[in-house]
Length: 464
Ligand code: SF4
View 1 (cartoon, rainbow, N blue to C red):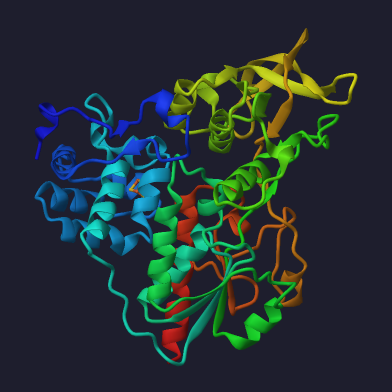
View 2: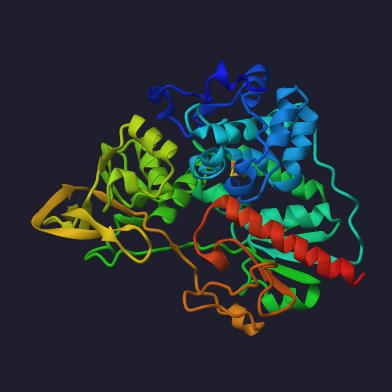
C-alpha cells in the first residue's frame, strides 16, 4: 500500500478513435491481472473512506476489495464486491465515478483518485472468466415475489430476493430483459453480453422471466397482487421529455430513447425503420447529459455527416459525466454552448433545415442553485440540421393500473413510496428506481432495488 507516491493513476486503454467509431464494441480494454493489483495497491486504506461512505450510493466496501485484489486474492475481492452490489461489473462501467466514489477518494486532490470503477468491473469480469460464481441459497417453496420491469432496479431487487432464498418471477414487456441497460445504454459503454450474463445468473438462481408481457394489458397488476406475496415495481421513466419547440413533431425529430432503442434493436438484427437512418446527414442533439452523449456517439457510428451538441449553459455546467464528454469530443462531436433552441426550421420541401437558436449567458443562481440562463437579445442564429434528437430528460409514463390496486402517485406521476423501505400506499407493493424518484442514475436504481428487497425479505420472513 501507499504506492500512490510512485505509481500514477492509470485508466484502462481505449481503442483508437478511428477504429472505435466503426462499431459499437466497448471502447475500454479493462486491466490485466498485474495492472489491476498495481492500481488497487495505490489505495492508502485511509481511516475514513469517503469513497464508500459519501461517494458510493451502495456504500460498497471499496477499501476492503481493493486491499484483497492488491494482495492478488481475486475470490475474496469478487465476493466482497458482489456482497453489496447486484452487478458490480455493470456499475463499474456505467457509473459517473468522477461525481461519486472517485470524486470522494482521498487521493482525488493531487495524486489522482483510485480508478475504482475500472477495478470494480475488472474484478468481476476476471472472476466470471475464471469460473467463480455467486452463491444463491435453495428457494423457499412457499414465498414468491413478482417483479415488474427488468431494468436496473428490478434486476437488483430480484438479485437480493434470490439471495434471501425468495422465488422471483419477473415480467418484462420487451423482447429482451435489462431495460435501460439493454436498450438505453449503447454497447460502446456497456456490452450487451455483460447484461445477458447477469440475467442468466438470475435465471440460474431460479428466477422465472416472462418476456413480452405487459402489465395492464396481458396481465393485471391486481392479478399479481393477489397471486404473489409481494410485488416490486421497477418500471422506470421511459417517456422522453419534449421541448415544446415549433415543428418538434416532424418525423426527423427523435426522442433520445426511441433513437437509442431503435439502433440497438437494429444491432440485435431486428427490423430497421429507415426513418432513423442518419447516414450522411447533419445531426443535432439538444441536451448536455449522458443520454445526449450516447445519442451523439451513436450518430457518429451510424455514419452521420456531422454531429453537433446544442447546450444552453456552458461546458463547466454540463450535467453529464466528464469522461463521456471527452470521449464524444475525441470521436468528432462538435459542441455549441450557450445556445438555447427557439424552433426547428423547415425547408421548402418540408424537410428539417436547422434549429433556430439564441445565444445565452449565465446569470445568478436560481432556486436549484444552478446559474440561471439569460437570453441575449438579437443574437438569433441557425444551426443547420437534417435530423434533431431531443435528449432533455425523462418523464414517467402514465399507467392506469396503479390506481386499481390503490398505489398512490404524485403530481408528476411518480409512485409515492416510504423512503426507508420503498413500500407504496398498498402494503403488498413496493417500487424503486426512476418510476418513484424520476430519472436518475443506474446505481441509485440498484440501491432502491436492494432496499426494497431487504424490506420485502424482512416482511415475508418475519411472517414465516
Ligand atoms: Fe463507484 Fe458506482 Fe461502483 Fe459505487 S457502484 S463503487 S459509485 S462505480
